[in-house]
Length: 405
Ligand SMILES: *Cc1c(COP(=O)(O)O)cnc(C)c1O
Image 1 (tube, rainbow, N blue to C red):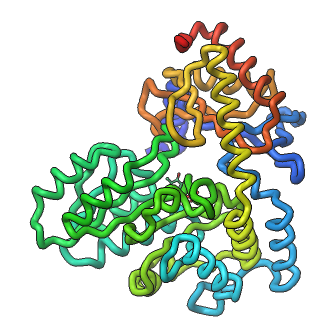
Image 2 (cartoon, helix red, strand yellow):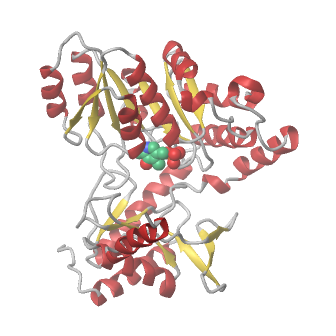
Image 3 (cartoon, rainbow, N blue to C red):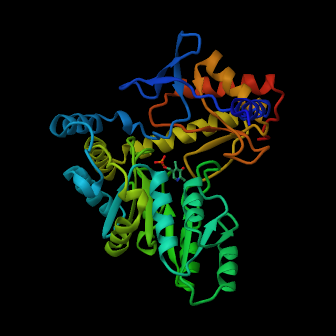
């Protein structure tokens, strides 16, 4: 086989379909969130406004977070120096885990190098080590959960997205004595819809199942202390495991699970993806702890964020730009064509200094290609007007359908 030809072939078919991924080469400006410098392929630079960051609240540049990270580096140096078991556990990790357990009202927490790894390792471990377990997984679950479940080689059932009746139907068909686990998310990243957590918990309780909730897009964002949708709805105690990331609203990096002391100790003791990897740098743990503490006390970021999401939706509505209605902070502007989606995104960046990455297959189904806009508390009214006007121009140029008011 000619490997090089094979790679070239596959890549050109991705390009033909409009699904080839091009990374924007950016330098974020601390203190000027969400502004960045873009380095173009020809070596020139351009000022851009970022409209697709998962640093939803700008916490990656929050003074307290930045100061905590500087201080930790000055105190402890850069890396952790080992796995958690062999010399890598730093006091900052221990403090972060206590902070997270408290955030979700659980006995214990365990941190991982990313949210992806936390899902993959925790679900992989629970599902492979509990004999005869059946895992029920929402049809739109994130790749990290799917990979963890797949890796465990357990029995699995896929229930219709957010459909607790379908979940109940599937669970009723299985042996009542079989151990069961229901894995789902609170805020789904691409459509921005929110799961009926209470109903899913009721079905799980009826069938004596554990529940595993991914609150990656909700932690820091919802609930009076930023504990997520389950906190907002008073449901945290009904979930066996709450999983989250430190890399999105908390603005740093890393992932975690929270749950009972025994469950956390079990995953700590058996998860390969936890055991055999270097611990997060102490500075990341310090920054994440500062960020969580800040968002536990301060509601200002969440309130400003909510107001800006409403302003963006209103500006799009005023111009007939179709966006998916949903109860979250994610604004999916629907294009429905991979090539047009990529084209619009390219022109927004090159001609308007607006950076929104196109979202194409396989992240979303074919014909639902979109621009996933994530407003932040720090976008100004001028930024919002500029975005809406630019989209309006491009909608006309692409002859895309308008939403009817
Ligand atoms: C981003 C994401 C993850 C992974 O979190 P990282 O910290 O980025 O690895 C997990 N679940 C969902 C739903 C996500 O969107």
